[in-house]
Image 1 (spheres, one colour):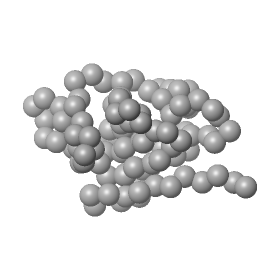
Image 2 (image 1 turned 180 degrees about the vertical axis):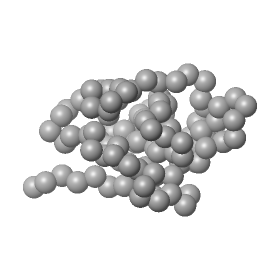
Image 3 (image 1 turned 90 degrees about the vertical axis):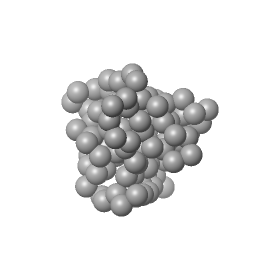
Image 4 (image 1 turned 45 degrees about the vertical axis):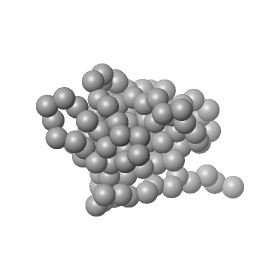
Length: 104
């Protein structure tokens, strides 16, 4: 049986905000999303420090910038991949740990 991704659009998100991100994930690759993104995305996965995330809403905060609301979410194994405007992407682990990188 072929595995499919479920993408949830939220907060007015549109399909174009997701872009090519799902194409970098392969069901037959057991590695986590960050490793798959790092290998397959042209600029790799480069976490940026300084973001905080509201665990209830998924909203990202960076000092001096307006908050970013998630526009889409991909459930990937035990990870959540949250996609925001301006090419920001967060990978959130079950325990609440997360990394944020730009994938534009």
